[in-house]
Image 1 (spheres, helix red, strand yellow):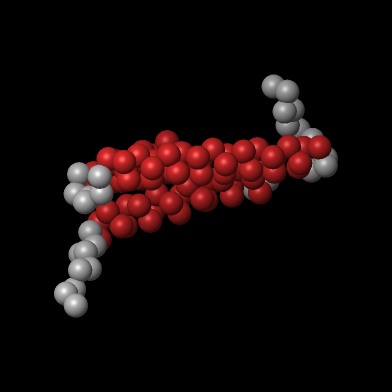
Image 2 (spheres, rainbow, N blue to C red):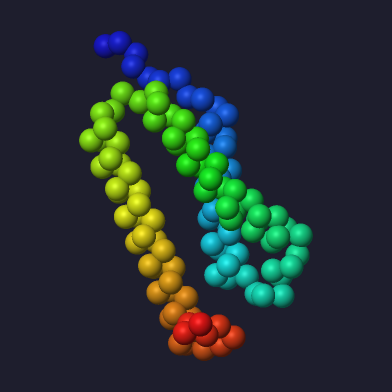
Length: 114
């Protein structure tokens, strides 16, 4: 059986890995970190790198490799729809978690009606 493994692009894997780590970190910091720590240098760095930067880098690397894929447009469209739906579901779950924390009194300083 011939070896059909694809050689990995280490730089792309590194960029995507850091992007994922920073995107996860920003959500964890936003949900669980006390507001007194939001102005610390580490937190600010994570907010900058995990905010608009991480998602953009991840999407650019992903878009770059679409050029080299052997999948047809229909398979790529299905994958794109699954990614978007998964993102929407995760966003809704984060919002539900936030609302639960607000109504339980753990985050009394946040008004969900604003």
